[in-house]
Length: 252
Image (cartoon, rainbow, N blue to C red; front, side, top):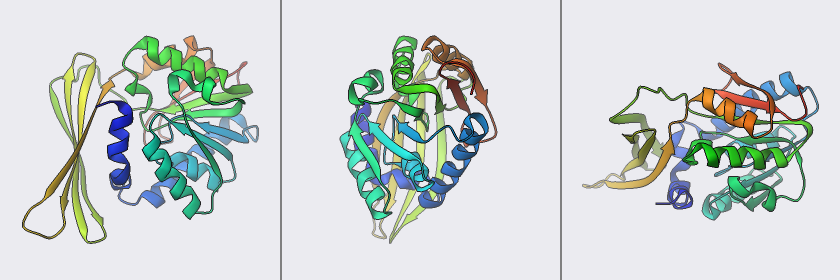
């Protein structure tokens, strides 16, 4: 299953990853806004969400007044993101673009380019990640920067790991949500399960599969630097995942 196919299948269920997706959207935007203002002051006006999925960060930041463009590799989550933005009266420009060819999908630069929720490790090698950071650099205006959020992988992890999300309710339906990771060296296969109970005698299991590169944060800092950004640093305790930020043409 390709990354695009994975997110196409995940799109209808994505909100179930969170106990309250709308509240999480607002909370994440507030946390990102706090970091942005601390590092760049009032410099950031335009934002490109380069891996927007169904719009969690893009919509939240737009609600705070940022002028947001958003792109993704998969058209199906983009369509949901458009509907979610429209239902909230939020103006976001959505388009189809691959992280590794980002500049070809965007004709202008942005004060800040972001890619959150562990999207970068879908790229399965240092070369692909470095290429993506170079594309993000090309899309960043002078004086702006880059911000990504990623999982903090443990280099000693191996074998099989179950990651529970818990019980979710969606109308009359209940879902048990969990992931299974199966390591093959630094690459692991991920299966995301949504076990649906609609109240009948049987349950329905929805599963989507993808692969990730368990790349350490310290290596991502190096790769963002190799991609052109300066003063690249890790920030902990400000978001639900570690943040990595870098600047174009020196510090903010």
